[in-house]
Amino acid sequence: MSSTLVLSKYQGGLGNRLILHIHVLAFAMEHGFSLANLTLHRDAHLFEGLWANSWCRYPPPAFGLPLHQLVRGARFWAEYFALRESRFPGTVPGLHTWTLGEGESLSMESSQFADVCRKHRWINLQGWLFRAPHYVRKHREAIRKILRFRRSVNPELSSRLAPAKSSNRTRICLHIRQGDFRLWSGGQFYIDPGEYAQAAHRIAQKEARRNPEFWVCSDEPVDLKIFPPGTMVCPHRSLSEDFQVMTESDFILGGVSTLSRTAAFLRDARIYSLFRGREIPALDAWAPGSTAIND
Image (cartoon, rainbow, N blue to C red; front, side, top):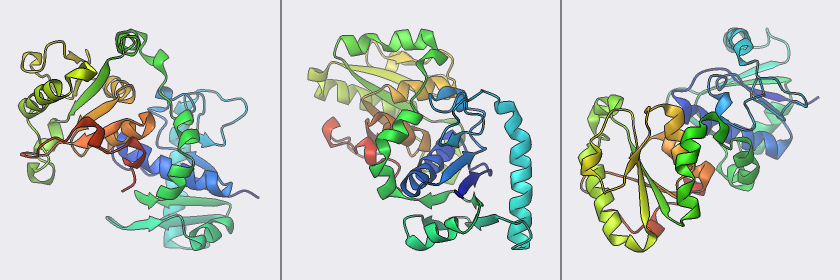
């Protein structure tokens, strides 16, 4: 009997949910477990290995169908039984609920954790900081294949992104998160678009040999005139557009967003987090995408 790991509790935005999915997926791959993620159904259409995989399962079904609207009911019952089992252990046969408190983390790379999972048919993981960085590195190519962005989602944007590849230009994404970042954690991570523009000008000057092409991904309108000439922007400022640009960029300059870190991992793009007053290093010194989701 194969154990199945279940993710049914929403953990923030898409970036958070993808990072959790990647770590749990790597753990499942390492130990031969199954996985059902009931929190990705709204965005499953963006990924090659999930769009026709209704429960975002691993291993994927032999004959998948994009029936993601049916997941809502399954998620409700999964949460109900997880809550019941956590309050009254042993009352739901075959189910074990593993709950992490806020800020609490757990390494899934311990033999004890795998042994507990093997004893149950279903293991519902409640919490965000379940981590298995070594397994992620080991299985990263298989994970990237499953979570490859579907370029057919937005053919118009895909056609705009294509020329840089044929012209050997270096694409640099400027992920400018405004909105909630003005207030979150006292605004200490908020970076004004003007600072991104100054950083882009410095990069354009120092890395001229790379012939950089800049793309702005921002959740609010920005004045493109303050950025280097030729800077492009996602026309509708949608999350899917931003994520596609990031997953097709060579370098990502962002804040502390989990979405940009996930994109860097999936693309294996180099990434740098911009902070006020900090000098930006050379592009080759930016962190490799393979390490972007380790913490």
